[in-house]
Length: 372
Image (tube, rainbow, N blue to C red; front, side, top):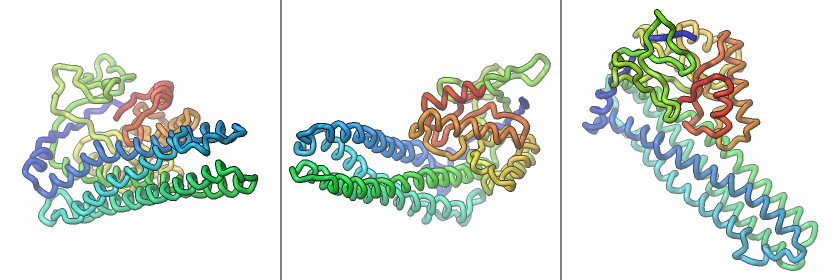
C-alpha cells in the first residue's frame, strides 16, 4: 500500500466562523446538526418501522392460524399494538420534516455573497437536498397513515365474523400496494441522504481550503517498514478516529477524506489537493464506477496518487440489509475498484457512519480498516 504524508487541516478557522455567527459558520453548523443528529435519528426511526413491519408479519401469520381469529377482534392484542407503534413512529417523522424545512430556509437565506470560501450554488445545493429529503419523509409519513387506516379496516373485517377468501385477498392486495409505495420512498431517502452528504462534504472542503499542516497516516494493517516514512497516526479500532502514535505527531492534525466518489466534484477536488500537496482518501461507491466514465474518473484520481477506500456499492443503510446483501455491497465494490486500479481498498467507511455486525466482520475479512 502507498504511504502518504497527509496534509492536516487546522480547523480553528472553521470554528471561528461558527463562533462569530458568520453565514459560513451558520451553514457549517446546520451541516453538523444534520450529520450528528438529524440523519442518525431519521435512519433509526425508519429502521424501527422496518423492524416492526417484520414483527407484524410474524404476528399476522400467528393470528390467521387461530380459528377464532381472536387477535383481530381484540384492539389491545399485540397485532394492534404493533400497528399503533408503527403509526406513531411514522407520525413522529413530522419533527424531522420541520427540521429540514428550517435548514433549507436557512441555507437559502445564507448571504455568502462576500464569502471567499462559499458560493450561492453550494448553499443552494444543500437547500435543494434538504427540501427533497423533507418531501420524501412527508411521503413516508402520509403513506403510513394510509397503511394504518387500511390495516385497521382489514383487521376489523377479519375479526367481524363474515370474512371470506375475498376479504383476505383484497385486503392483502391493498396493503401490499401501499407498502410497496412507501418502500419506494425509503429508497429515495437513501439517495437524498447521499446527495446531502455530498453537498455537505463540498462545503466543508471549501471552508478548509486555506488551512494547512502536516502529518502521516497509515492503515492498521500497513505497518511502517524500517527506513520508510515514520508512522505518526493510526486508526483507533474502537472509535475509527485518527490518533497520534508518535511524539512527532501533531495533535491538531486531521485526515482529509472524500465520500461518494467519483461524483461530479471528485476529480476537481483531487487536482486541487494535488496542487496543494495534500493527499487524501477518496471513498468510492461501486454504482458510480459501473460506467466507463466513472471508471475513468476513478483511474484519474488513483493515478494522481490518492488512496481509494470502499464506501459500499449502493450507499444503503447497512443496518437495513441482510448479511448476504451487505457482503455484496462491500465485496463487489472492492472487486470493481481492483479491476480499475489494480489494488483492493484497505479502508472502509459505511454510509451515514452506520455499520452493522456483518459489515464490520466482512470489512475485516477483506483486510480493511473500518473508519467513520
